[in-house]
Length: 110
Image (cartoon, rainbow, N blue to C red; front, side, top):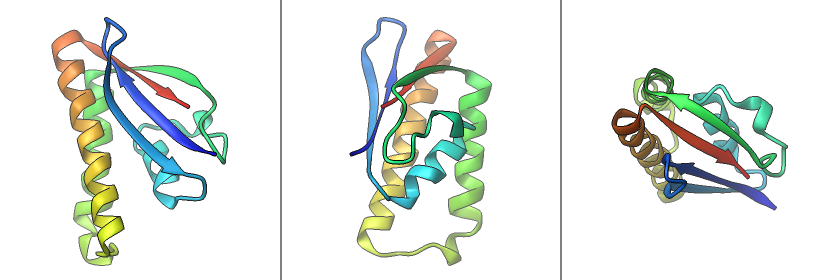
């Protein structure tokens, strides 16, 4: 089990992907960045799609910066944690690029 989360453009092409194993604490953090707790099934996503506007994805990026950069000294710096934070940021940035080009982006929480 795990969380397989994908971002899609209007042509339904996957533009971003991230995976969290069951029990990975970064999964809960990720859902929080998008205010998407209702899509979190605990051991995996619920397979539901959400559409986000430019401002909503910008807000997710702002939250990311608050959580991970403002409190950077409190964050673990082991290789996995650093990699996971980078993956989360890249997912958000790819979604933001798409939203800016197309007006919105879809995210499927599987």
